[in-house]
Length: 296
Image (cartoon, rainbow, N blue to C red; front, side):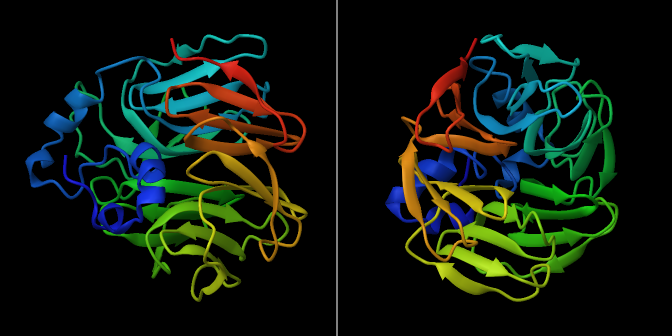
């Protein structure tokens, strides 16, 4: 498949990161995928957890959910082998848990779905068992989705645009991103303030993405922001850093042990997926990591 323009411009140290995370396996720039058939076929190959795109913890029951090329998987506490959720094998990208049993995502249809190649924004309100289309069907492929209440930020890989919604993703306004985006983190105390991780470093906006200023141009990676005093980034090599002042200064915490594919925080825990399908967990702010699940 053709690489997106953003991916072609990434420096070598970040190409490995984006190749396996938010920019992975999207055919929006390849005209041979106009009917979605070649893309959907490729998503069925390999292991069950091939190409993890997102992680989430369901606040309804504390279960870990894993969004992949081949659909959604879950692993209850103490279970290291994920199991399939629902019947669909659609490619779920931009996955985010926004409430009890309520998830949002994007991606590409499965072979048995008579749908356009880009799913736009999809939502599940039953813990991932079923999904419905909310908006932008056929028009957007969100590589990154982050939400705080009804405030949703999404980076659309088909057109390289940043989209912002204040009503849960039903209506959108388009923004100009500071550069190609592969990570977003919303200030937990102010949903108008958002940090973007890009091919040119970290940027911050205080007005819902209308304007941006550089934050750290020598640092980039996947982001998570569980509380105002703990903004985390994991870089392409797996090194975890934390900022206590919204990204102005950073301190190295630990290493996940490989290239990251997804990165989230839940309460006092951090979760990181590796490109081999392993999901790790840290209970000490990223200093040490243990295996939570492994690819089946």
